[in-house]
Image (cartoon, rainbow, N blue to C red; front, side, top):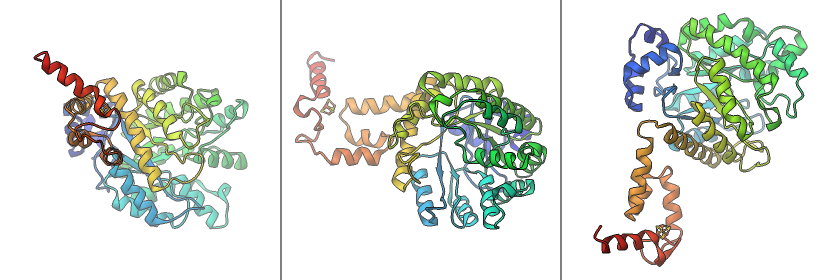
Length: 429
Ligand code: SF4
């Protein structure tokens, strides 16, 4: 039985029980949220991946994008990125491969990953069309839907589908002055396809067929924002809102069929518009889980885009975003390395956790308090054990050994913590 169908009958599946236990929630409350569609558990019925909940009242989750490109394609490297992402605490990964044997890469990632796996099947349809010598503009509706089905059969748990890029939305985009135009790969494929063929986006036109397929596998739909802003100047503009309006309709249609749905969001958004961006999605899409890429709050930090994304991600999550797609230091510059992946996951986890503390997510603040107690006790082993990235914390401490083992080289003998401990002891505290 599908997760959503079961929830609507008031039944808690094993996945729901597992998520409720992990999140410290009452399972009945979780079942109600899944029934309404404000929480989803992306899990293909053929998949053995961990059950992870996304949405209202749950811990903010992190996704790591991995996968090859036409210029850099090596299966072993992508599997090493998968391992690094999972070790660093990613809650899900997306395989965005477009280079090499993408079927073999996807299957290997699905096979090895302990966490839910997402994909963007239109990449597959586009790569196949190019390899067949037909070119992307000759993709058929069956090519696009067939790619979704191939991924579902392989056990992929959620798929990004850019169903909201319709002819009408494309026209909005043409009339909207933008700096970065369309920056989503899937969005640009469909814009080119519609412009060339003069026909409606097949993923919109055949949305009911897509929903049938999702029901067969309990595949979760991630409604991609093909017109997401790729520059601060383009944030929250008419083209983005036009697409979000279509996505809103698609969320209701999916829910009516019992298909779990999440909504993707920006992108590049100036700090003062991040909250409005989240509010708009939550309001138009009836509280559907919101999956944002960062967002980046400045365009001028190539090499540090993971930091810009963490700033935007913390604000977005505090405002209600549920699922943060990481950004690595390599964003906009090259395919990430294994180290970039690790750095990206940890950096966005800082953002997610900061928001969880602010939102009062059960257990979040307690973690901080335990680490602070250990710091106050100068209990370095415990400080390192409780650190988000213990390996990095230990490496930093080991790289600069203090003269007095109880302290660190930051202040040495002038350690404020030890001094105040002595002061309190003299006071009899
Ligand atoms: S030496 Fe300074 S930085 Fe290090 S533990 Fe003491 S107060 Fe903190």
